Length: 347
Image 1 (cartoon, rainbow, N blue to C red):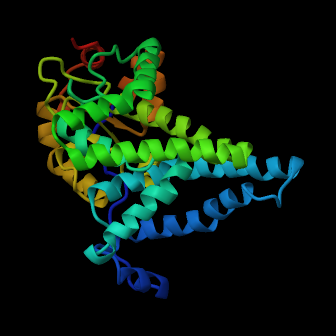
Image 2 (image 1 turned 180 degrees about the vertical axis):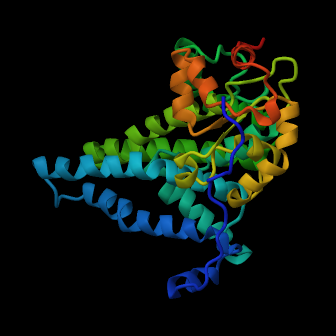
C-alpha cells in the first residue's frame, strides 16, 4: 500500500501572457482555465474533421482509402477519443461560453463533433446529467453497477450488453417517469436521428460510414461502460448511497493529465460542477473524510489497470497501489478483504 504523497495531477497554472488566438476566444468564454479545451477542439478541426469528410469523397480509392482510413481511425478513436469525451463531460457540467454563444456552441459540438467519437447527439448529456448524477449509481440509475459481481468478466459483459440494447429504453423510461420532458425528447431525437443518418449514409458510402460513425458508436458505448463499471466497482453495501464509498479516486496518473482529472471520481460526485483544476486541492481538503469512510483511492494507476486487475482478481496488485490515507487500514490483508467485500453483488 502507499502513503498519500504530493499530488502531480494538473492544477491551473496562470499564464504570464495570452496569444492573439487566446485573446480572440476569451471574448466568448466564461473561464480562462478552459483554454485547453479550445486547443483540443482546434486540433480536432485541423485533423479529424477534414479527414472524416475526405473519406466520404471519391478522391480516395482502393488501397489509398485504407491507407488514410486506418491512421484516421487510430487518431480519432484512440488518441482523441478519451480527451474529447472527458472534455465534453466537463462542458456538460460547466458552461464554457458566455450566455449569448453557449447554446449554439453546445449544439454544434453535440450534433456535429460528438458523433465523430461515437456519441449519438444528446444521449450523453441526457443520461449523465438527467439520471446518473441524480441517482449516483443507485438502483434507479439505468447504468448502475450495484446488481453485478464487479470482479467478474461474465458480469461485466452482461452489464455492457444490457446497456447496449436496453440503455436507451431504460434512460427514456426513467426520464419519462420523472416528467423530464425536455431531456427525454432530446434523448429520443438525438438517438433516432443518428440511427437514420447512419442508415442513409451507408447508401452513400458504406465503408466511410462504418469507420467514421458506426464502429465508433459501439466502441464508445463499450468504453463508457468499462469506465463507469470501474468507477463504481467498489461499493459499501451497507450504505450504497454514500458518495465516498460508491466510487473511487485515481491520483498521480498520466491519465489525469490527458483526461482532465477524470480520475477524481469521488470528488466529481461530491461536487459535480467543480472545475477539473480544483479537484486535487479539494481532495486534499477532504482527505480526513476519505480516511474516516475508508474511501478507495489508487495512486499511479487508472481505470483500465483497475478493470484488468479486477477481471483477473489480482487484488494484490490493487493493494500495491491503494492509498492508505491516515493509516486507515491496519494491514494489507484488511484492505484486500474490504475491496473484495465492496465488489460483491448488491441485491
